[in-house]
Length: 363
Image (tube, rainbow, N blue to C red):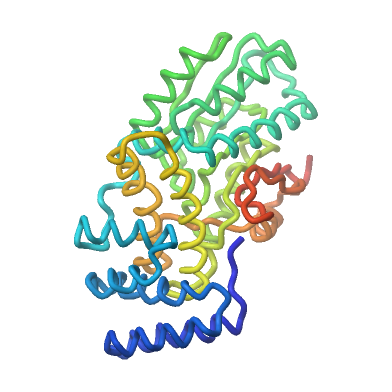
């Protein structure tokens, strides 16, 4: 989605080298101005320098550098965050509460992405009859969030096959999310429903939890909405192998961001982080809610995730968003065929988020 040219990477690497060599701030400013002359997004020279300084906990210097490009959304929110907190650390544990997520679901980005994903899933369901099994029909939802999306999916699918009862296996790392989702599904799905909750990250699912899912097969399909990017490339393949053992069909909705393979502190990684989270944050800033509520969502969602990616070594990140191209490679190695990716949110005429079906190669 957001990529740099090789010549730009070479220029920007000069900034990283200079900071590693403890260049003075005044000389760093001069270098950034010089690098800016040789890259397309001239403001990113200052964004990159500011992010590197912040990662080294040089807060005052980072703020000064972010202020050089404050017309950029990412720089603006990071400047304000540093000014208010005085540190480049997560304000809180991400999604310890469901509140920031619930604010995020009000954004145009989330709504448009969800609508696009729902259209694709309904098309998939219409073309992929439910498994031949006794009632109820079973669906596994990975990263259920507050339960609103899977409820919409189920209520739209019900008339296609006159489904009388449904079993939902919902998986999330947050107990708060699971409680909220279970209650919402039970109250809003229009037919008889059984909800089984599993609290874990999908990449950390235990053998005992796998056995719980296996006993509930056949599973019509697995739905994974913005939920399986919390692991690096090398863990995505075994994770998909587990999912292929549950069902022949996986519907994946994700963001088309380049946060998996680029090296820590590299210009490529920081450029993708700044641009993608900048667009994401704009959707939160445009909400008609209080500034306090906006700040709650920003601090505990895009800012927290961006800080983690910027500051942590690759092995310690919490997010590894993967491009469409790389997901297709991963799926192939895990034994899935992929359909064409369908954009659910477009930015600058490119897919910012997408939905794609994975089908087991033996099916």
